[in-house]
Length: 479
Image 1 (cartoon, rainbow, N blue to C red):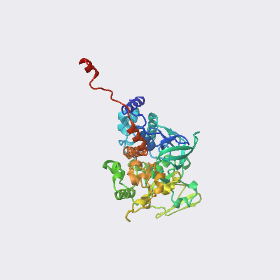
Image 2: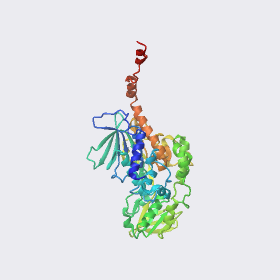
Image 3: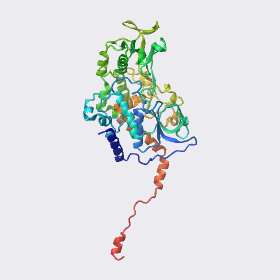
Image 4: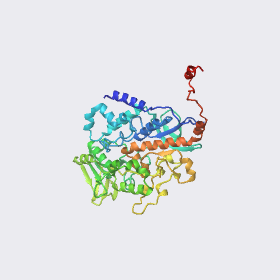
């Protein structure tokens, strides 16, 4: 099957499920302009999948916005530097149960069934090409180069979104519901420890989430701080681009060997995590954070194969200083000088760190507001996460905030403690998107239930046109 044939199959499959039926949501009128029923912030895999899910539910007055240029949304073509995805290839995600929309169908349309069997893990660049195709074939309503600056609640359950970009339209959008499908950093910010940021020049380090010109690092000695998969991805990438050396420093004395995500994928935890008690959720996520996610075996072996690669275990950075145009790193094993530092220390999650939430974040309930964790597992990192409903909606810590937060949903990594990995791991998308879509559409319905019910009670269109006795029988009887 060619790609053209697959495109035709997708269109037929969508016709079979009556995709694109009449919208049921009642339009809102506002003096400041058009009111979208839903605006989705972020056109990566989460945002695109959410848009498709809403369209399937006949909620079509929607818009997806993204700050990046078309085809460059999400991490896959920007700061993600792994060779392949870490998710097992057989797991489905944003296809939402439509076989022709799966990555496998897209891949086989170009490489055949044998080509699929030959794939170990999905190549990162090919995943991005699949997302681009997915957006095109579904004709999803996306506006690129549109950066959300601020969410401003208005009376009547409407939010004004302050947006900047080159689009020649209004700098404001109006929406009844807002879904923050803003990825791994969307619930906070990337974190550079003060031991680095406060002690060396900005030209000597970069967080691995940043755009980095690796050609400038050719022939250089590089230190990588962090023991997660991203640290090894970036070490590999630097060495492949000509770096003389890449040394990975890990605080632990041994790399983690267990990947809890693999167990969660087949145990039912990803799809059912939201029904656990608060105590069980917190304990499970504390356990997950303790183990974290190790590098894949192929990534690790690829790094070890480079002559310039070195791994320092049990080597926390005790001090960092600038000396002679280099960064000098001190560990329990001594001091080492490098030309550049790559910081792979992840992120901090807290709604207070998000500028778009400036007007409402003080009302957003955090886990520390709703659950007092026992001392052995209590964590300020977990406590700062927002406390969400099972449908990914913010909850309020104040009565005043109830109306201000109504209609705001967060479908990014900040949902981990409340909803598990369903919104933060590709393997959870097939379960999470329907929950989110159901929550958003249900809220739209409940908001308008009075006029909807009034229309139901007033409905008097006659459908049945039969009469008894039938006219033909009356004639036959001589009536």
